[in-house]
Amino acid sequence: MIDYIDSSEVWEKFRVGRIARTFIDKDNHDFIKVYHDGYKFLGILHKREIQIKNNKIQISDELSCNKDKKSKSFLHFHP
Image 1 (cartoon, rainbow, N blue to C red):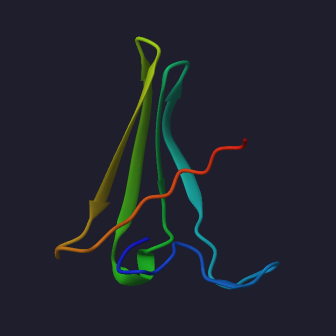
Image 2: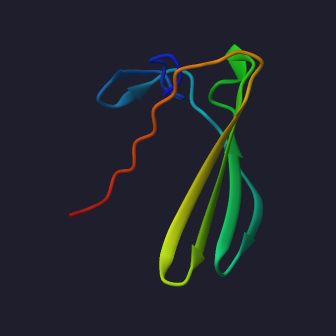
């Protein structure tokens, strides 16, 4: 979330308005670099890198914007 705005506009349980598109920039067996355009209307691109190294997962996020923005990330894991 950026400034309390989701990357996709959810209207109801099964209805979504604006939908973020996801793109893979780089992918191999222990690293992936992706980005999405869900904040394009705000002039922001969200990039994420996930790397597995020494049995640990490292997640790095980057927001390309000119101003300081409040952001919050959620990771959902299946029980």
